[in-house]
Amino acid sequence: MESVLHRLFSQCLEAPYITVENQGSFAVRKKGCHLTLFFEKSSGVTDWKNNLDFPCVPYRDMGTLWFCHRGFLKVWKSIEPYLIKTIQDSSIRRVTVVGYSHGAALAALCHEYIWFHRPDLRGHLVGFGFGCPRFYWGLLPRQALLRRWDTFFPIRNGRDLVTHLPPVFLGYRHVQKVLPVGEKNKYSPIDAHRAENYLLEL
Image (tube, rainbow, N blue to C red):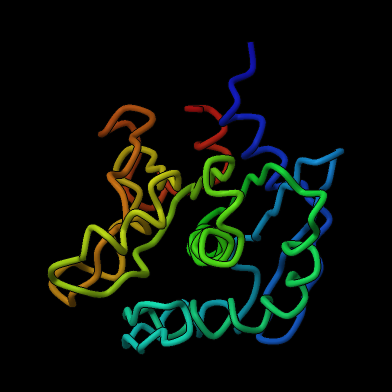
């Protein structure tokens, strides 16, 4: 029987993505009052430049100042204007946010945006970041701030290298405990990140 995670990851791989400025790629699916947002993995040189643009910058317009991976924030800010009306749609009563790799970090930023701007949806918001890199910078994350990601789940297959980047010694942290799938030493750190191996282990 196909698991929920397997289904969501498959849908994330197959979604009909729209690409906007800074190569930000997203897809929207609405079924009744349920909105699902997908964010695509790295798919070109621009994405990789943004992935490696890891100095932290302040994220100032979310009520509480916090610091974020500069490249991921730049891409999210390119996507955000295209999703504002969709997210503010009052008919939406439930939201699922899904991303893979580069897209997982964007999904986490989108998740926090929805949490902040649609407080009525906080009990009906869930996010999944498959092969999620770190994007939150701060040696001592504040619990009040991290509650914004209470229902966002970073997922790691085995020793997936991407989920360990940027490294902790640079001050980056995951916003929630990483959910492990697969056997820890079954794949190399690079092979563990491959989509086909996530599909096998979910």
